[in-house]
Image (cartoon, rainbow, N blue to C red; front, side, top):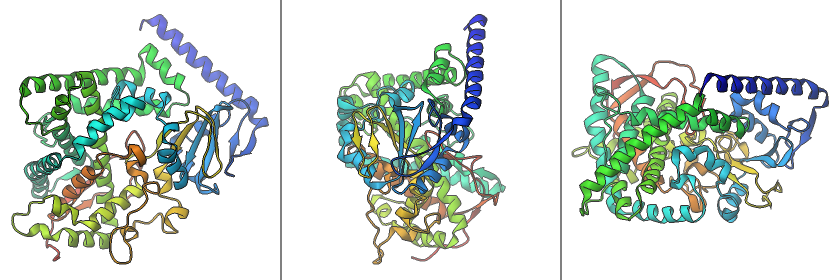
Length: 507
């Protein structure tokens, strides 16, 4: 972009900001308090609706939404943007509404073009960013592969190799040298290595701190962060103008996506050459190639799985490590749950992982309080009415909100803000089968996460292997800040000192 174009752009921004400020002053005297269909009150202005309220709370949206939902009789709010019904955004923490959106009226609540535009440059036509026939085709293919026993065995073998050869030696070295480790960074590196091996059959060696990180990893971070910035914009035209002029976060996004696409395309090309009639299709990439799809489709599918498998599991484990240090009785029960690792060679298999009910309850409780995906949006294809009576108009953004749901007394009881793994058991000590519409961490209905069981396998394997051998002591006693992006993370990471566990709990 030349200097003249840049000056024109800056002038436009200045004028818009000035007009926005003047409009805000002029309408202060006409501000009204409106009540949504569900009874929740919030500030609304002529013409621009709740836009100023969004701006005022942009730094704390998850807390603002949660506060509004708590005082709504049905845990649903409807916020008008620019005063138009079509621009209305509905946010719900009501399980009945969520079942209606994700299952009962599934066809009426696709992701929609406004959402797919946000991630279109990054995820392309991958399974997480498409609707209709294209989604259905990819879903059937992926569902077949994820249900294969051979893939499950491959996942366990990848975890064993990564944990034994990299994670445990890294932690042992930290013990010997009394080093402070950022466990969030360690777990993200581990998760990226693991999902790359499972999805691409390629080892980026991120957990090997003696080697430089391949360009794909930081480019993935930049692309995810810049895509999330689109979703935080007050209006879509903001990021579209930046994209048109190729400035700011949009320029970073474009450059990062080019790196990601180039790296994955190279891996696909090499894999096709290596396969050459071979039927050794252990990783997802080889399986998708064998199914006969073109390179662009395969690329977008594996990029979607990379994104889903990287930061979600690492975020859940990071928060659980921190929570266990604040709830030592729960940690003691986890140690009892994994004590059998000490028998024989200490290796874990699929059947071993299935036995770890208390550890699974802790993971669910961690994700209830600190969900890796804070919210998910759909867009109404036609007018509708939710079970609680909220009217939905064609084009409305309808968002269900796991973060707020975890803080609703109406759903989880008066101790909803407490870490209590026991809530996941019935009196007989058997794990509850909670409704996925009450706990939609892995979505629900036709689009329920295919990798749910794989995610639990990975998290159980890593948590059990670490806790059985080491104690992690956080360096800071302050409560970390939860940061919602495409996937949430802990601001500043989780800095810990690592100690050898002095004794093992008997089963």
